[in-house]
Image (cartoon, rainbow, N blue to C red):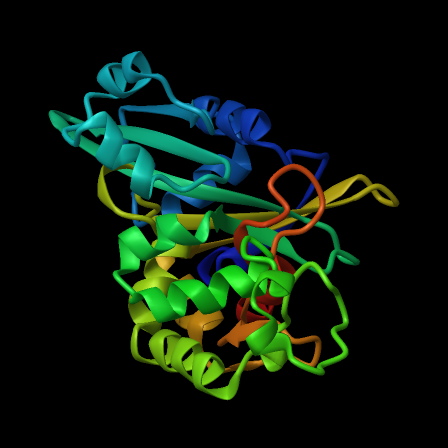
Length: 277
């Protein structure tokens, strides 16, 4: 079995960002990596007439949506669009037009996490329909609701951070209700934060890891179902640091700036390279 059949390889030079990957796809006739990616996607490059790669901006205007010819309303598309770097690959074979949406992740070998989704708790409630108790618990978890405003919950506890409650500091009933929700709805949650929905949902994930030492980029390209199965595998449980593991995905308070009180989901993208070994 070749490395391309496994879906990963190491190439000379750096192409870790979306513009560089776009350029490689648009130069597919002469670019070895782009040809490999097309083959992994199931295309016979001898039959491909043209390839056009478009970088999907993180923030899209209505005119951008119209230009891409997407059917959903602007509001619906923005709700379920992935916030990370995305490419839209338009492949033409004869009179057949194929469209592949690719989610791009940059990784460093020593990087702990890569953010895959972040929103206000109320936005997740709107999308996933959890009840007000789960919302209340998650807002205590992110600090959107201050623990000091609910002394009946804090009582005599010595908090690790006065601005918020860690998951293991929440009252047992709230903690269990949150864990139960994400256990029952794990497939939905994993799909929404990794794949998204609608016309810009990801079909593929490309992870690139650049090495300055030898000027090489190691990459792995996998279909999104394989990615979701990999990162979603495992139980829902509280992490040693008081966040939540959803399989191999970590749900945590964003912290930092801006928007420190948002809820975010992170993965270790380098872990996916195990599928290419």
